[in-house]
Length: 385
Image (cartoon, rainbow, N blue to C red; front, top):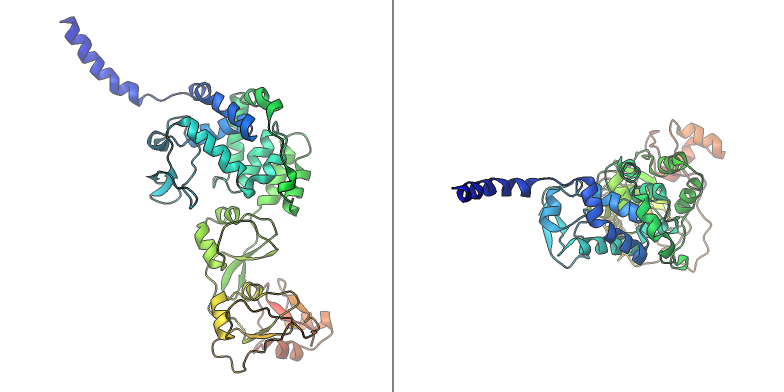
């Protein structure tokens, strides 16, 4: 009789055991050695790794973790050739990486951060600087949650995770700075985080992640971004799928911006808002398309170009299919005087701009093929003959 009772009790208790959640302390004690080992191998602070693991796995209790052993919410991406699992996140049914065990997930997390140029600036920080790392991960586009840095910092401080960083701090591999070049944004970030205390880090995050003013260029929303900015970070900040952002901007692959430029947040128009555009010094066909908010392929078509031509300053390019005059493509051997242009600022009109450059309103209209006095913020105007 006693055996029968114990049997039924065990049947009742087994499901409860499987559904029981683990605590933060249990998660930390279970996986801290992996975090320390990876810090010694790749240089990611153990405190940061554990804080990310706690957040991404809901302290070791998430559905994704149970399905995939994925501790860091890393999605499949095009470079992932192993198995994946479908899971709802920013969108329904997204593909997340699957691992044989937790050790594989921790190792891939280190490889993912260390092998991506987008995160290179983090390895220039002191590994003990967990606040710099937390805000840096957000800045690089690791997560969409605006409170991501604060959550990591809270996890580290409330659970004394910094002790695990200190275990390995003297065995961190040396960062080879020669492999990377600091961009202006990295330098600004580094200067701001030099000071002690969280205020400097928070100021850096505010400067580098402040939402930029959206402007209208030829009927499409755009923002002005600086060289070195991560396209993934831009997509994340503006809640746009990365592939869509690449499509909107006639780009083929993810990476860092190679120059200051406008980035469109929606599809560009097929035609420009004027009939033609005069190419300036050092401008490519791509630059012309972005500046005028027109799709690159349409620009090719209107000017009977293949896309690999080297155009020069002074070339006159059609921006509409029904342009009356044929395009004028200037050969590079010609010496052309640069055409001076000006970007329209808020609340400026033709009269104000004409006075600024000592020309008449009629001249501005003629040079820019304008039919009325209406201007748009960011619109490029030719201001000299």
